[in-house]
Amino acid sequence: MIELNIEEIEFLVELLNKYPTGSLRKIAELEGIDYYKLKRLYDRYYGEHVQVNAMYDIVKLGLRSYVAFLSVPQNDLRFVAHRMYQNPFIVHQCAIFGFKNGINAVLHIPKEQIKYIDEMLTKYSEDYEYYEVKAYPPAKKREFGEWRYSYAYAMLMDILKWDARTPMKEISKMLGKTRPTIRYMVNKLKEDGILIGFFANIEVDTYNRGVLGITSTLDEAVLERFRDYEIMVGVLDNNKYIFEWFFSSKEDLGTKLFEFSNYVEKVAIEYFDLLADIEKNRKYARFSKMVKKDGSGYRSILEF
Image (spheres, rainbow, N blue to C red):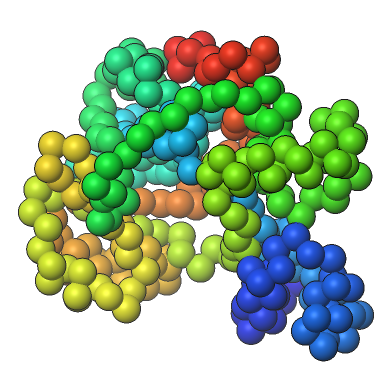
């Protein structure tokens, strides 16, 4: 295992956010950096510790975002997690212990299929709750689109989501499309507002724990109190809010739980590392599993 230098990683991320799909030689030329030094950094960290991923506007794709909490017995946790990861509409999950002991999952559900969410979740647990979640502050109006592309677009979106720096030669081979066609497809996604952009992410397990809370009251004091911390805020349906505070298992869990519980009505601890191997080893095929092969729309969330 290589020794990580966080300054080198942050330097590489800064460059890749500036030139997410640019060649290393071009980046070195534009920034006045020694090419071989940049290549050594890239070969050292890219792929395992640094990744450039595509970001999509799922609202324009007709997908609604939900967060679900399922009670799962400890002995069945990994078995259920494996089953859930077969469903591409379940896009993320982690182990939680608190107001629900089991799994916290993020769902992207086609707008016309939200009536089937209960039936889908009962496949994995008899005790669950879920909420539609929006960014904070929420947009005043959301206009949900629909899937209106060929199946090749779903494959392309998966490739770019998994690694936006995948060489064009490889993408061409995977899709069976010419490079000009692929460039047209990428530009089409951008013009339609589906592809928001490419962003470099650090894949270092700095935060492997989280405190998650749900409350019906948004106390502005909590935003001010945790302004300088890794915290995310979301708006749930039924006039509720969700907070997540990320931290390391090396930090004192009890103190953080006690402090955070003052601001929420329901609280749980997230263990991101317990199911991380399942998520990491899953072949990335989200949109290409969601979408029908004929491109006519989404498959049923109950198929999996």
